[in-house]
Length: 113
Length: 115
Image (cartoon, rainbow over all chains, first blue to last red; front, side, top):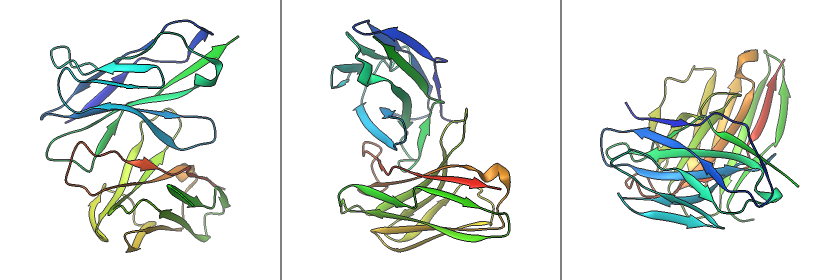
């Protein structure tokens, strides 16, 4: 079945540092890939998505590229801010199971001054 | 109100109580979802409704009973819960369930504690 694997957290960075959160997936079809972010006390918000191989999703300075050859969708940001502190979830939606989002366990990011 | 709203935001209940969680979406969507978020576990899909019809029940115990009276409202009725049911319950909606490219929009969740 489908699965998503994220790097273990927490990830602690200083402000303006470079961020990478790794995400790899296993899927039987041609999935769409998503990054969601959850700020403290809130629900999940879509951060970015990519729907086919080699697509790059981007939003708020965050980027992720859909790499079919390595089955990866790593999240990157060039310069993090304290306000980026949150939990980040990688997820996929596969062909034939469009209603089912399969999530990773989430990676907590803590950015300090 | 915009987006997806959930009430109550926090709920404490005993194992013999009956309570309900409410979700409302203002996005004109036709699909609605219940998820369970427990500490250190991936989000678990519980139920899916598409055009008011239940299309997924992910082996959820019968002490959780969903209801979808229309495409804008979704309820989760709770009775005789167990302490291990304590979690954040998230509601989401999407245009419908036909496209893998569609985004699901989430509410803020209800933090449930079962004593």
